[in-house]
Length: 73
Image 1 (cartoon, rainbow, N blue to C red):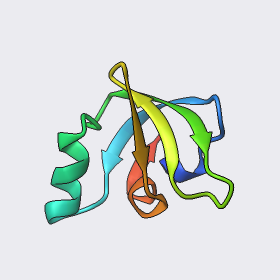
Image 2 (cartoon, helix red, strand yellow):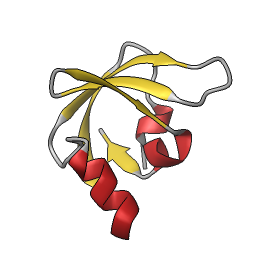
Image 3 (cartoon, one colour):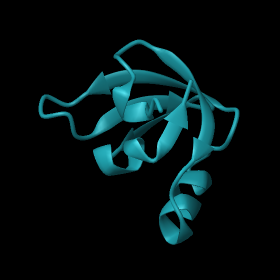
Image 4 (cartoon, rainbow, N blue to C red):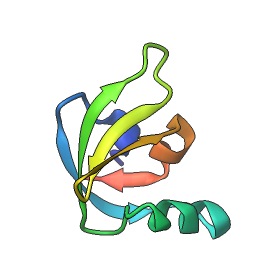
């Protein structure tokens, strides 16, 4: 399984599924991260948290824990 956390800087990936449940999954979906959407990894902070991405034309920062539940290809 390849997650968003494993993606490299500059890489563009497509969301396969969200593994979270409840409020965490709903919050990620509310940010526009849904199945089939393309995500580009822009930056990763020096200690790896957070990860800055571009999704649906806007920039967003995600915690490592949130990036781990987003399965990508």
